[in-house]
Length: 217
Image (cartoon, rainbow, N blue to C red; front, side):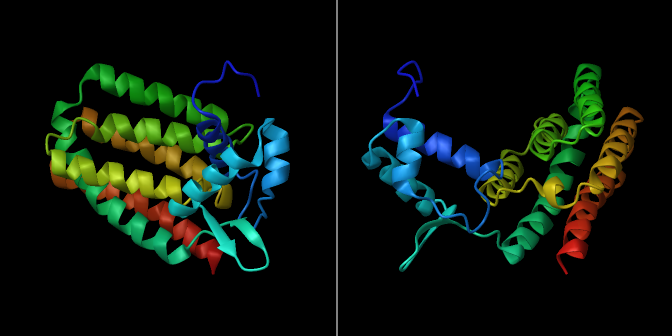
């Protein structure tokens, strides 16, 4: 790693290892050998150890006796609760945002959804998940209630900590998700009432959760 990368070596190690966990290169149960990671990054073990401790505090890494540091598994119960909560609060935020969403916002969301549709041809679940967040951000970021908006952000951050590229596990759900995005945009464009928009947004989120739970059982 070159010195042109910003941040301390500990910060760089943290960012590098976290990125590999999030994108699935280091899957749940993967043993994190500090010396090997340090060699790969061109660092000593010290900043890598600091990075691993930070990731442990975030719940992404677990220390096991006689094993060492491993990538934490995804807790299906935590995922269930997070998605259930997010479907409620994001649905409310989207409904409250709808009257404030203008034509430029709609165009931006539709452009992102078009990228998501293109992504279906050579499916990249990590990129698709990132685009999915970009799309939904357009729909909820104009929510005038800062408390609800804060809860939505917390929900998305929790999903990130769970490494929820959900579409890696349920790639078949991706196409339906894109179609539902367009349906949501049409409701907003048509000036549908808040209850209708909120219900559609909640059902959209719940459908992804249902797909995940179906394949997990």
